[in-house]
Length: 204
Image (cartoon, rainbow, N blue to C red; front, top):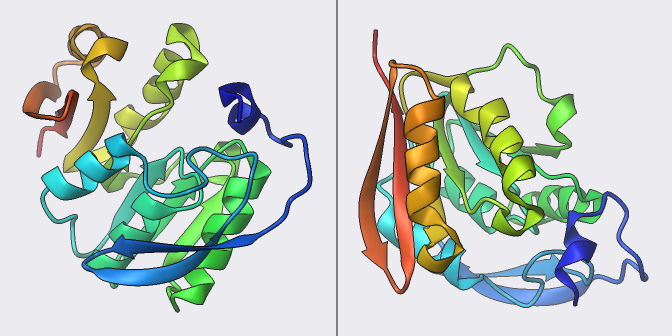
């Protein structure tokens, strides 16, 4: 599948659901996937690193997955924080549909997947997890992160997984420059050619 397909709101080709068995939050889950989306055949390497490396999300409040695909990050957030509200955003209509359907398959009533503009702009997020879509290009990526990261709640953290050879260090420098003084940007870990970046919003 060409990468351009999964950045489209309405990808080409039929929307044909197929079963997908993956391990999320320590158990094997049977979900649905489809062509025309990011990593349709399983959990990609970057997302796997993120899910293995980051600490538990806030148990309550609003949590966010930026670029949800078929839902591995959003579903893990919901499974690990059943009393929180999990928002999942994507521009791809299939991803939104699949994430909502997969949440229903798992009985997760605390997940809402939508387009970015459908999320209340006044909402603030206690935890953000994302494997951001680096390949959309630097300008588009920067616009995406500038849209969401300033919406961290006081004391909240965003955790981003970025491949080293796709510019993780330059992205860290850009975030440190772009975000205001209430934010702290740090490299938390490196695993399997990926870096985990953390963006923290000051409590006060």
